[in-house]
Image 1 (cartoon, helix red, strand yellow):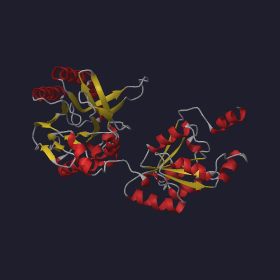
Image 2 (cartoon, one colour; image 1 turned 180 degrees about the horizontal axis):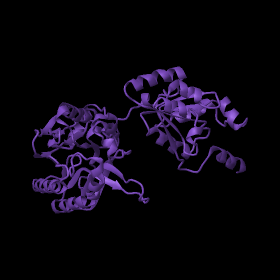
Image 3 (spheres, one colour; image 1 turned 120 degrees about the vertical axis):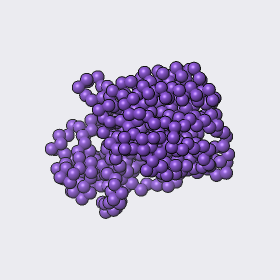
Image 4 (cartoon, helix red, strand yellow; image 1 turned 90 degrees about the horizontal axis):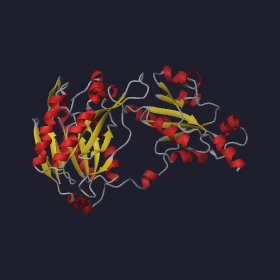
Length: 423
């Protein structure tokens, strides 16, 4: 399989010029027998400011159509990121814009991935909404070959590349706008992602200058053993590299390290005393992580609980649940509740991937617990008015924020119990 990497300088505000450069490179790659062309991040715009994002995203469908025509002409696949817009039916809302990696062939969009890890030091979080779903796709024309998509800053998060490898990615395709000042990080991380996942890692970066930012170039193909197969310097280049896909199987025959965690991942380390929670929370916060907190009885876990907790987890870096003890539940719900004991309820919650830690409290509200741990984000259902949420004033007084999440599913534990009794 031949892979082409087109490294160039996307000119800010000149989509036509950038599109022409990419079109010429795709044609050249096709003539050289490439079956996949990987482009830099935001190849049509380069670095993008908020006020230009909507305008640029509006041109993305036409750019994709052009890539499809080129794919049809040369029988290849093209991958790279573009701004993607989703304008809500309510025209008074601001449209959502994502930094999306599109994979196209002659038939249309093969796959797409919305960048999960946005680079806040350059204000990317003010331009784009974060994605939430890792993506692995079957490479058209190459039976059984799968590729995973990553974008620039994603490269610093090994758990994402591991997820892609566990889901069968033979190669990781990384589009980047990586600066020269951290060029050694780009080279090191590409190689690390290849070695730890025992798969190919292909990275296409920009080169040249955009305002005060100089891009590193160094677009590379790394094989599953960590060997550098090809690398560009810091000037415009079209690299075409043939890769032997059997190399991954050969490396994994010697030993396999790219498998999901086993015994230690199933060990229940989530249910903590308040003292244990404070210690581990302090350690995580000292590294810059933000705690999300919510509370509840979670007596009979249902879909409404799960979707709520998943959305809560997206609000920060680790989710703590304050779980009402049995005595607390009885005081709120009556003597017939809870149906399940606090130990059983905690065990069930600990099986959810989105839940990081669980600690008990016996008071009617978690206010004393919140005073002790001071979460960065306090989450409650949207049916609660903010001034009625226990601990809200404390959290806000310490610089935290309150998030009210609507329930997607119209279901409740009380209603579930009623149905069981009447059946």
